[in-house]
Length: 211
Ligand SMILES: [Zn+2]
Image 1 (cartoon, rainbow, N blue to C red):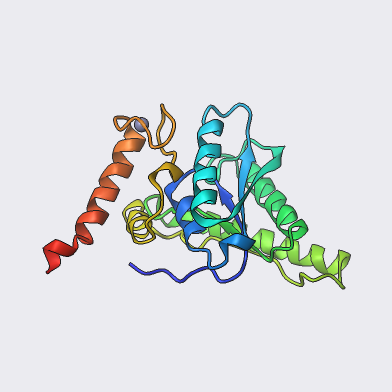
Image 2: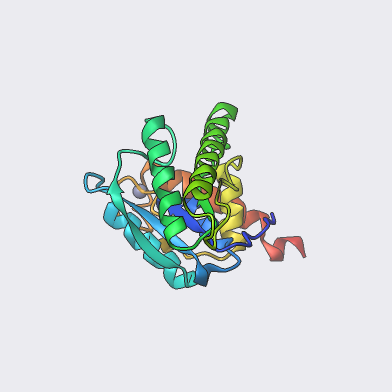
């Protein structure tokens, strides 16, 4: 599977998920981009996600920034208001950093069309709000538009795994495990889903089998 690179320098909202890692991997200008990690003291996975972000930073040259705000939002599902607040904060940081694009690295293909629609709607809403804000506050600034996009939103986990393999991303960049630091315990539900998705992806790209 081939995916178009993300041409513009961007802020990628990063949660240690495979899709978030792939989103960073697709950046055409990672050295000018930011991996943005949400601050969440209550989240026992925070240390793990920070480790994943550092692994992606090392692999790509992108800078890791930690969010100043603490929200209860995950990237998806849960509280829609909190998810919008998270996106708005991401656009604010992107603007300060001189970045014209916010990338939400989520893949909702396994969750169904309604979940995909929710993410797309939220991105559109926040893009619109950011646009109004930029035009009213900083007409002479470098950034004249700011878009929130979710380029992987309709992909299933298996398709994300294919991209992950294609891009040769570090296993330490994915913190999908419920119990342990990346690369995970290998036994929990999260680990098993991701391992089997990677397995299918690598079988599909087994060069020896094709020749
Ligand atoms: Zn695990």
